[in-house]
Length: 232
Image 1 (spheres, rainbow, N blue to C red):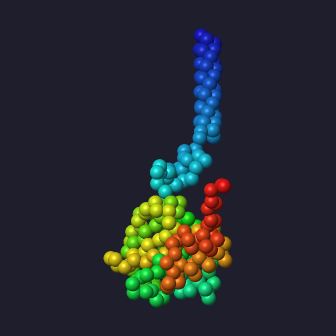
Image 2 (cartoon, rainbow, N blue to C red):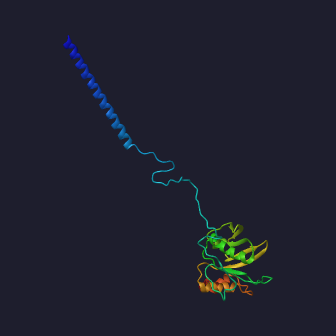
Image 3 (cartoon, rainbow, N blue to C red):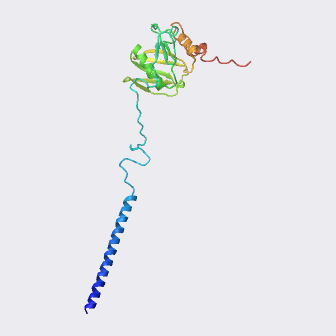
């Protein structure tokens, strides 16, 4: 009888030992699985950051543009406002305005302007700034729409709004209005004109006794070639 009891106790101890060993193996396997899952689990992304993109939020249809604090674009130098093209040097960006205009305005033009390009929004601010210093506040500018690549309706220059009127006249002229009805007529020199011919045209346009049209001045100075006559 004692032998049977001893055998039973041994078997129970063996069973319990096997059970404990099995439980230890299961626990160890669970720890390994948790470790591997943490090791290979993707890290959460930070708020506002996307893979391969900037951390800044993306907005559709929104464009931020930094503007220069000067009157015109930062890349456009000031306009050189001359009183006489005969004795003073001229270059692209130069404007000539007669200091003494006739009271009856019998001359065709009061001045001439040689812009650097055909981009009105880039060229007008510097010109208007220079004319404002000489003439006072400019109310509006009239331009030929066929001579420019853009057509802004108005420009804000030094806090002052200047209206821009457009007409497809094709006459290479510009009208500057000071106040309500004080108009100044300018000859427009094409940006691609050579310096010698541009100077000649500006000199002709600002003569007080000159009543020649813009086309005639540009043709006489060599900027515009004379149309060929009909073949005989």
